[in-house]
Length: 262
Image (cartoon, rainbow, N blue to C red; front, side, top):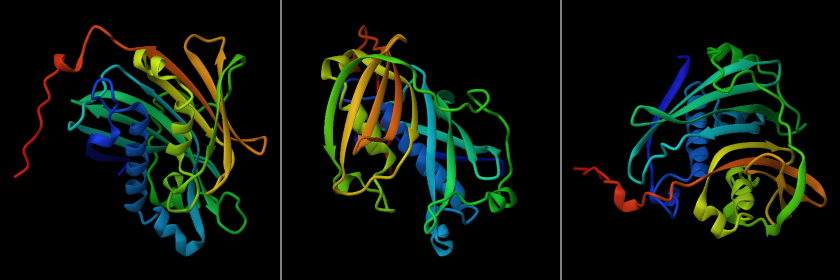
């Protein structure tokens, strides 16, 4: 099985407040769930790795969106596959579909980490269990690069709480993205929607840690950097690119077909 596919329904918690459409950031959670289910088919999910004192971490993540974002209550499909393996690195590529059209695509870099040494484990078992499909939806996998910045946009302080944690008791990936999104003022989010997001996770953080997120404008159009730090060291770097919303349409321009479940 080269590729894994999983259907989901957009739930209320994952839609934006402006158009009843799926929040781009929430799409990442469906992707991570699909990856977990994919690895579970080979008994390589996070809970399977506990026996060998290991766990999965995502190190980099890149995703781009179209304007064809799905609505609340509608179905989407995630398609994910392993596109490249090195001695230590596992690359996945993915596509998300809505009404049989791609509305998001991207890639992610994963490692299996040894809990004792905190170092990456070799990918020998992955290469034995999984087939490789070398389609790379964004071209060759490139090193994460932060564009030059010229102006601080906003800065916030966040103290990690229980809602930020995953089952490994680390701050989960979505929380870092939510923290970065909080630096965008409401008037900006009213008129713009996320087009592309690239993220690099540098260090783990835990319950009670104090994080500082600084958002900066760059020389590129509608492009921002978000640097999240703990004790002066970066734990997560994010680059976002935004498009202006289509303000000529409203919720009432669309007809939602909510399915009846018997």
